[in-house]
Length: 198
Ligand code: ATP
Ligand code: MG
Image (cartoon, rainbow, N blue to C red):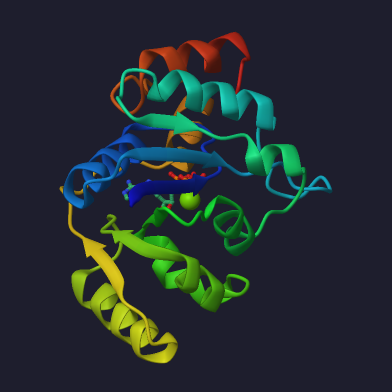
């Protein structure tokens, strides 16, 4: 049985915390590969402006290139518009592959807003990493609540808190502040070339 980790997100832009949780999951769960899955662009111009999918895809490709076993998929981008995680996981599930959907703590807290979570638990393991802003107690309580309600097991992994978010990076760039500590140089080069987040 092969083990694949899938990490979904907007990746606007990809940063070191994304790479860190992917690498930790790979090492501690013995995953054969990690698939980064950037979301497609929202169908209508939504209030939240998200960078073009092709650029976010390029940033992920560049950001992961020094990491063995890290790959990027254009599956959700190609679908165009909203993708549901359960559908993506169904599409990637194969007989000889065990899936691990990798998330940060904010996803665990929001989980009940996701569509068809029962199906997510059916086709994949669900992995949650600690994230600054969420106490251990809050996460433990939510983990137990979800596990009981959906008769499932959630894999909770603790990591050294990296207080990095794409929102913060975008804001710092807008203010002309340095972001070199938060993401790979190759990603920053694309941000500069495309004049993103100004
Ligand atoms: P934004 O601020 O735009 O929401 P983000 O930094 O949260 O960006 P996403 O693309 O939304 O990044 O997240 C992709 C996945 O990575 C999510 O599961 C999220 O919880 C996780 N993640 C992002 N940053 C961290 C972090 N610092 N620690 C743990 N998990 C993280
Ligand atoms: Mg986020």
